[in-house]
Length: 305
Ligand code: UDP
Image (cartoon, rainbow, N blue to C red; front, side, top):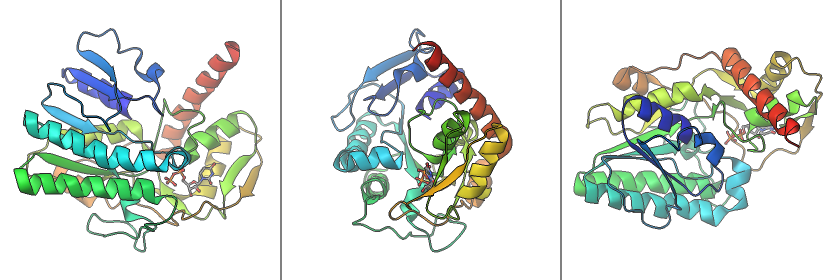
């Protein structure tokens, strides 16, 4: 998401400083930007304070794939909590607007569907997803406290499942896993029954939502859901990807993931009313383009081995 956001900001004529510790992000995703005079890259872990001259900050820093964030739970928790604190202090010093990439995970395993922003969530504080969920929840808390205490200009978006080019083939999330498996004609791994649902938004739509949020009036603080309300079961997603990739992959069921949310679908009424935003990219078209992208990435990797 970060590389796509950098491109959109550069296209809108902003100077961009991109900071990433490259723990899950990859330098290849921004290599076409590195020589641009308006673009600077800083390898930085936001658990340490960052001192740069800025008018606006987008905080997207955190592992976001469940296997990645669960591999370093304490690191994930503190990247979200201490990282948010450091960037909020920076925004305060610079009088900058600060935008938080929050998550549908703040709703946990939701008991209502679709999820509206006023749903308070159902998070297991002691489970293996809590490092991410509670880290993001605490980040939101800090954003709203800085806003109330210091009048800081904040905007909080809750991102629902997003997919698209530049995900790592080994990212571990469902869309990249299924596409890579389908392209290799390897078994498609469904965790549990596959009847759990998700709603998938193409990254271009999502970044469009962030740009609208960024340019919205200061009284629009969020939280505001950004996602595609078209809800699918994981089984349906598997069948679509096999069909769209012309794959011979069989579908296999594995153990269910612990605390896996059973349903997820955004209510985007607030984004529509306050930002005039809704996603446009239909799931089959978005998946086809993403399959093409992964096909090229895998062919390129095979040719270089
Ligand atoms: N999932 C799956 N097979 C995979 C990867 C994920 O069945 O190879 C399921 C996972 O259990 C969850 C859904 O797909 O129900 C979405 O998982 P993902 O890790 O993409 O994101 P989440 O929404 O859980 O953060």
